[in-house]
Length: 339
Image (cartoon, rainbow, N blue to C red):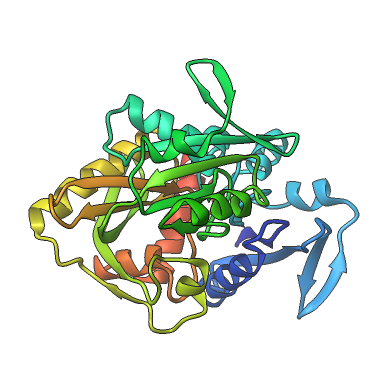
């Protein structure tokens, strides 16, 4: 049997989402194929091994990880999706599911994904990057730094403006600003989560998501789904706490737009040097029907309501088969034979 470690929890604001994702994965894994080792990280960074529902603190983590054939780090956000745990597993030479160090780090940091998407000419909305230092806010442009004047943002971006921490996920810390006062409050709110903040011109239209699966030498883009948020935008509460949020799969945008989004999704995945899986999020503007990329998620949610497994299920790949493909792809590349 394959010794599979499922690592979940973590120190990020997405701790609870990670638990939900891991629970869903654990319920759907083929128990006859995998010897499952459940590893939990609490909010303070302590590691535990869970056996028969009992938690036992881990004191020799390296030994436990080295005994595994492969790890599935079901971790979202800082400390799990940002390249840190990927780097540790690389150093230990333990195979793992998902993107590598670079793609994970870049995908987590929205400022750097935007720079990469600009270089690869993937359309995105206008934005400004704000830095917080010594309780003051600054804008850096062309290597120069100047103290933030709110007019610098309002002169270059139209309301509504979305303000978000550069390093965060599941829309944690994201606010929609309709005027200058809301913009100031949104910047202050985002700075509680990261010293780097993005102010981004809002796009009125459809929120669209596309899942990516690396299967052997092929990169597969799923059909696309539309988010119908119960709130003004797809916030954390709208994703996980408000049942009125809905998804439409496939999105009602026509086959040509679906194909265009799939191509952009694969392009974005390659641009960050993605591996294994990702979910790429887009907007389709209401008046122009133009596509704008929003972000890439290198370890998307795996809960029962998450778009990543639902999109591939719509393409005929069942949840359990999807997990097998993700795991087997890594094992094949690392040439581990279990026959």
